[in-house]
Amino acid sequence: MPSDTDSIFQEAAWRDLVTHDGVFAVDGQQRIVYWSPSAQRIMGYRPEEVTGKLCYELVQGRDPANYGFCRRNCPVMMNARRGRPTPDYDILCVLPTGEERWLNVTVAIPRSKRGTFRVVHLFRDVTRRRTIEEFSRKAGALLRQLLNEEKAGSPDTLELDSTPLPRLSRRESEVLRLLATGAGTRRIADTLGLRPVTARNHVSRLLTKLGVENRLQAVVYASEHGLI
Image 1 (spheres, rainbow, N blue to C red):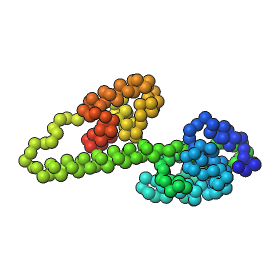
Image 2 (image 1 turned 180 degrees about the vertical axis):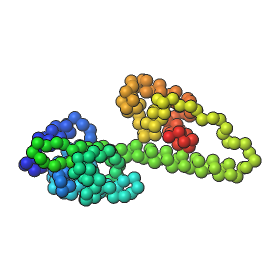
Image 3 (image 1 turned 180 degrees about the horizontal axis):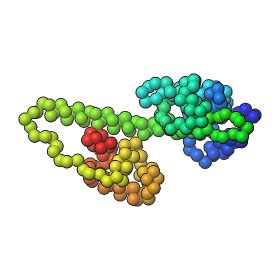
Image 4 (image 1 turned 60 degrees about the vertical axis):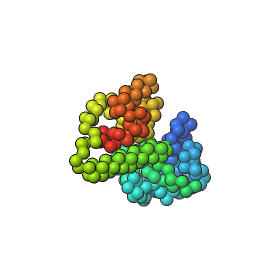
């Protein structure tokens, strides 16, 4: 780590002791100037291996459309140079082991009285969430295809399911969307500001209303019927 690193990055190192997120920072040329221990845990690179390297050559993140998001003058850096915030985003990275991992990234632009330009990235592993979302999307698409094929092959039969869709409350819709991201009871409770037992009750009532047995079936049903 460069000797002239200001107090912002001393603070970043301290924050890393209490956050599960990985943290790294780059300068105006997109060279890595800070790499936290949790960044090493998530990505597999040691600080001495990455300090001074170009972030986009190291991370090589791709967006959900498989487009190279991490690049010279990426949207994050363009926004940072203009003092604009960047919404959090997901990228797919390849670890040193060759394993692919989805990361969700939050960007911060610290204000430095010394005029030092830095862009801080906080990131966490969301591979499980992305996997569940992709599974739900594919499962829903497959079910719709099967239903359409069966309906097309039996034009004289009654509709397979004429039961009206359940009417969900605003809270139930929020819980359903969180289930689709792979959220568990604790995360649902934290996100919605509920007690875990209340979140669990909402999930139970939602499963009953949808007529399904478990959370995965709820997500598939919701995807199939356009509820999410």
